[in-house]
Amino acid sequence: MSDNIDLKKADFYLRLDERLATPLAEANIAQRLAFEKFRGPSFRFSNTKIEQIKNIIVHFDPSTYNKILMVIKKDYDSLHNEEFWHIEVEQLPYVDRSKQVKNIITTFIHGKYYPFRKTFRHIDFIKNQYPIDKYCDKQDDRSKEDVQIDYYTTKDCHYKIWCVENIDISEETWYKLVSISLPEQYRILFDEILEIK
Image 1 (cartoon, helix red, strand yellow):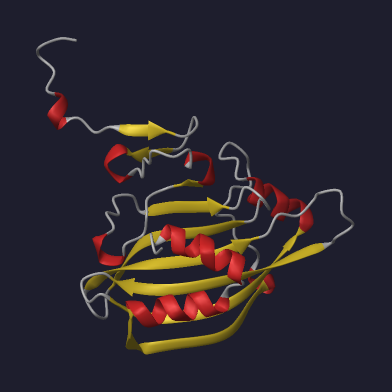
Image 2: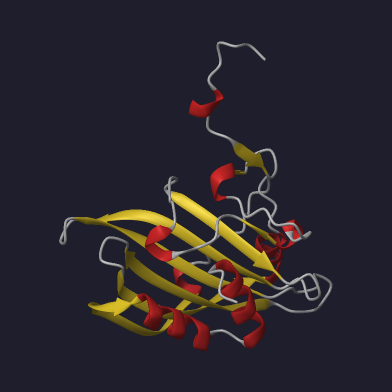
């Protein structure tokens, strides 16, 4: 390589496919072969480095092909004059396309996280319904397809069950609310995202 290139100033990324890469500094590279189980950074609340407007984290169980999706999107609260992040967690069960199922229903938890306060100001619990074909495309997680893993259902199929807002909610309480809202097999995947053993 040329002596004129200062690699210390370069940004390094691990390429996941043609359109998707993760910063090398945020990659969780382990000695074991776990790379097939997840993609995206770990989520460590305010210690998470969020450089993109939208960040996607996926963990899956290789024995069932069930996945958990976390989408983190930067936003700005003009009322409180500060940045916040939409944190979305959705369970994505594996469904065989050949089954005669018309719709799939998933659990979806949305929160508004204020990293400078280290609190959430909003959490809602939702059931999403997807047509089987769109859902299977979403769950397949192919970034080149029209339906990607962060595809949203229609507003008519987005059912809000409960909501807590307008109060500071601790990171620990958010974790407990999300955990209790997920079946056990998804709690394990959720804990992997948060690096909780």
